[in-house]
Amino acid sequence: MRKGHLVGFLLWRAGLLLIASYSLLRVARLAWAHLDLPPLVDWGLGFAAAGVLLVGLSFVMERIQDGRLEGDLES
Image (tube, rainbow, N blue to C red; front, side, top):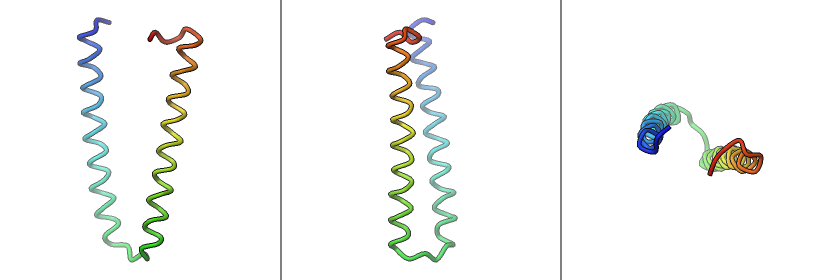
């Protein structure tokens, strides 16, 4: 795949990810507005979600690094 195609593909996928993330955020805010939870629970759920996101990102980064070391991915 040429670099121009790769950049276009990555921008396209990043745009879809951005749109999906923003849509999910809007839906979550609408749903969250109807729940009557104490502020401490709000913070706790937020930190838990951030932790899950960071763990998922670390798994992806580790897989990319392992793939480069094994020769599956080119740097």
